[in-house]
Amino acid sequence: MENLIASGWRFRLVAGTVACCFCAVIGRLWWIQVCTADRYRSAAEENRSISEVYPASRGKITDSRGNILAQNKEVFSLRGDQELVTAADREKFPQIAALLGISEEELREKLDPPRTPETRVNRYVLIKKDIDEDVAKKAVALLPKTVPDEKGRMVSRSYFPISIERRFVRTYPLGSRAAHLIGYVNREDKAVSGVELALNRFLEGEDGWRESQTDGRRREQPRMRSRDVPARDGYSVRLTVDAMIQGFAEEACEKIVREYAPISSSVIVSEARTGRILALANSPTFDLNRFSSEPLENQRNRAVTDVYEPGSVFKIVSVASALDRGVVTENTVFDCSLTRAPYRGKMRALPREDHEMDKLSVREIIRQSSNRGTAQIAMRFCEKFGEHAYVDCVRSFGFGEKTRLVGASGEQTGIVLPPEKWDGLTITRMPMGHAVAATPLQTHGAMSVIASGGLLMKPQLILAVADAQGNEVLAFPPTPRRRVVSEKTAALVAGMLREAVGGENGNTGKNANIPGYAVAGKTGTTQKIVNGKYSNEFYVASFSGFFPADNPRIVITVVIDGPTYYAERWIAKRDARGKVMRYPNGTMMMEKKRVRTRAYGGSVAAPVFREVAEKIIRWLEIPPSAAE
Image 1 (cartoon, rainbow, N blue to C red):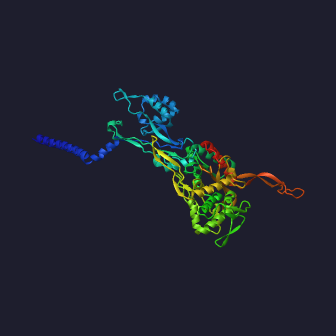
Image 2 (cartoon, rainbow, N blue to C red):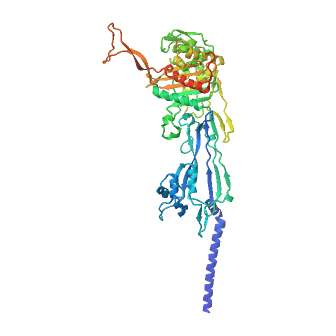
Image 3 (cartoon, rainbow, N blue to C red):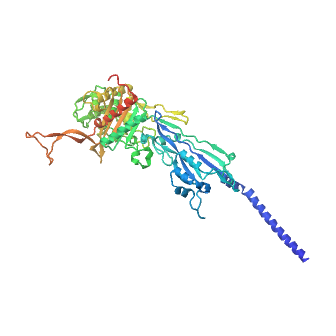
């Protein structure tokens, strides 16, 4: 009886224990399958999900003739997975290493290093980067195509210990050509400056992607692929720049550096009627392919970031405004020998001249670049219409406001003082290009007003944007900003500027003249301000002009900051002690020597204009002027 009772107790204990275990298992299953199902399902899907990005190729940048200035180069790298290396793979290491141009020891160190229990397997090791696609494919092709399974049977291989990774590298085939306009993309594939930055949303394209799932061995299951979106390559951008003319401008800047050792220089070339930039060169410059090793100072687009007093080139503003408003005619005469002139009841000091002048007409004032004559023209204008009207005319030529050139990072507005901030000399100094500051591109735009028939055109750098198939999706026509002076006035001033280059003796721009072509233009020479005073050693020399004068086609501006200029001059001969030597009759002995002298725009910048213009004439096959 006792045994039966004991046996029943044991039975109930065992049964109860088994039942509790089943309940626990059922409860755990219920908890997993019902209460926390979403969490485990998400974790499982995450472990089985794979996502791959298809990188988009950045669009090209070309010049107006289709020459490539910037493009993406496809490069390939080899990546390794140490976990997938087999004995058969190790036998191929010598051949793979020889193909890649590396040592076998280096390859083994990356793919099959010595392992310890504490060593973690690297499943994403870089073997070699930036290699040709053919080399990468040949390296992978050397690996065995089959591997033994659990039962020793040879089966096709799903994954290899070496894989090919594709990426794009931005390259600039012409190196430093148009560097300040194009800009560049940095090592992180971020656009930094120039057109690359300004039109980045068109150029960068959109990456594609693929979402799928894998099995327990991390093999993709194509039937489980949920999304497969192809990449959309970036649009290409066509510039107004002509790579050949850009080369002419950059060669000119290089020559300026060799001959005059300036602080900097800028050469700008554009179409007269459209405002399209054909070339914009600066020195110093930099190589777009080596931007990371180039000084940041060289990467600045000085044509839009550096300001200077434009000097006599600015005289076209005062003369054209006065002619357009009827204040003077081309034959109105002013006494340019005066040192002071009345203005609003007070005598004002007139600026100095480079040489003595007498009474000159407005036409002669431009031809001989008279400071005093231009000042008196502006004074008469202000007495009739007021100083604010004069400043409005200055601003209408584009001074004191940004040009809004595409990609012109860091562009400056320049300085045009309102009448309230003028001092007693401003009325006589601003008309000759002092007491005002401008960028080289602003000065170029002002001369373009005369060349375009009185219109201020927006400087244009982009011609069109096209998709990957070459279909044009955006076009950019020439855009006038405003009319500055009448077409008649512009033609009249153009004639005066023609005389300043190729007229009678006394013209300041004669070194820019091209036989057979009617060249119009104006020189500029300004002293730089050093320690708050105008320096007698440092100058900015410039020349801005266009041709043919009777039917303008090309505008060129040359600005040279701080040139060192030597010229032959007759100077007093001195002995070893520095004393002036004389003949027996007391006459001073003279000798001809090359001495450092003032770098006038006519002697330094005008010849550069002529050299660039002559090359453009040959390249564009511009016919000679009929009148010439």
